[in-house]
Length: 148
Image 1 (cartoon, rainbow, N blue to C red):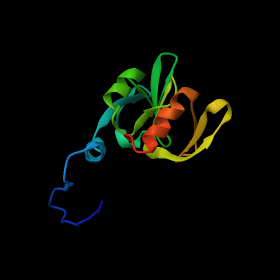
Image 2: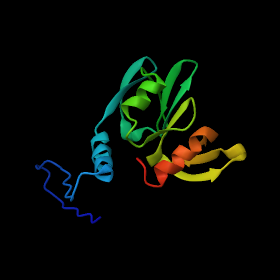
Image 3: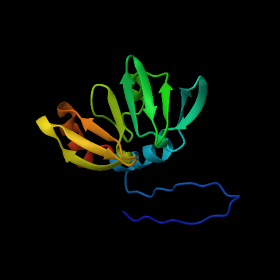
Image 4: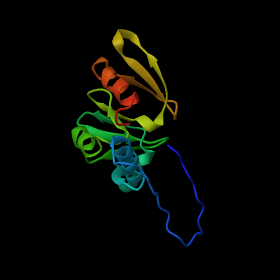
């Protein structure tokens, strides 16, 4: 696939043009990714509500019936349940990696096998996340050409 980039003047609206023979799963992945760049969620921190860009999320974790989203160096509480977040963004770059964690595949720096068939992923912010044994095959599938 060829990629062309054209610089425009500040007054013009940015746009993405996709030229394809057919709209297939790869094209749909590109469309979903581009659209996700503008999606925001509301998160709370210190009794204040903040707008969080979906693209800035490293991972989401459920702890004691509360759901937290972790950015590069901030943590916010979300109003969603983990399964609600997962169903809203199941075709995007987010992947359920354990019963309590959803990770942003675009924020992963490296993978390595761990004990008992699990994997450890190192995120771009230096944090390590465990991929549970039951999710490893799904992860491999996504990385081989499934929806990332």
